[in-house]
Image (tube, rainbow, N blue to C red; front, top):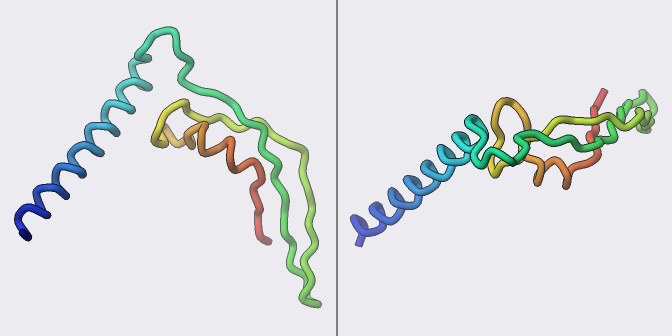
Length: 94
């Protein structure tokens, strides 16, 4: 029973590893060739400034274009576009 569970777990981890490698190779070598590797998402940054009296002041910045990678996993230091498009606001605590 325990040995069978370990085999299933190893198989799942192996499949995830293959999925990651395939995802990386498709971005690195542009497979398929007609697909764009990178995209952009407009992100609203704002600062949360904590004051001495316990209140918080919010300072919103202009929206900025952020580069994202069109893949399942993050690659080359960029977040995947499916994730970045769901997180359009970034809070910076000061």
